[in-house]
Length: 360
Image (cartoon, rainbow, N blue to C red; front, side, top):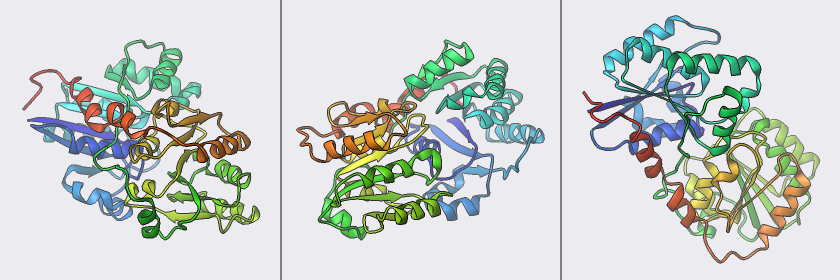
């Protein structure tokens, strides 16, 4: 039995966290997978994100508070020994610091670290810390996008980087009946609908998409799935632009395939990204997608059915949205995602990094 332990900063709805959960489901035979969340408590996390409930026995929380906590490294090392972990997989700089050093202390056989975005390396201090940690811990270094790998090479002067794009469960994200999906979500049926899913935070760019909507015909509506600290500001922006009848806030959605199935077009207007999952999910449901050209977002796209635009430009976004909404596509983006973006392919690539015979 191979024991794989993922270390993440928190377990809240997001791409990294979804990826870790998927790797529990698709980790392979004779593999037991755990997720350690540095922050939060299990009961509260499950309450906020019900998807965690089936994984309750596989998720462990340390409720880390703000600030440096050196003792946490020792506690993590003890847990890794108790679990008999022989693979530790960290995600982002905080988990690399605590989980990576704990894995070295516990003498874990195989260490893997995935960088999910690289824009934080523009901060000289974070760049220096990351370089020191990677030199000390010496994990197998993975980037989830070509653009992330290129930034790591440039900023950290590291060439030994594996590129493993994120994947999604194409068996779950499938095409469906648009009218039925809209009725289930209580959305208008006789309009053209653009959708956006993600945390309602400034970096996700929903405010830019709302500005773009203001430049589109009145029969075009926007639906937003997700919650966050920018929600009140976005409601205010919608009111100021007199778009109240055309923008629909759904909050957190548990049945995301239904959300995507309700759309005519998906849009990801982010200001920063790594390799986002939402365009993969939308396209797997057969929905053409438009993304802002940040991070590895354009790498998620089927070139025949989906497009990208410069970030933070509502006018160019509106023009592309209008063109795509009125374009007839002869093929479905789903075929591309099934071939290149399935979670099973991602899981196989990560499994191939583990040494042969690395079992207990």
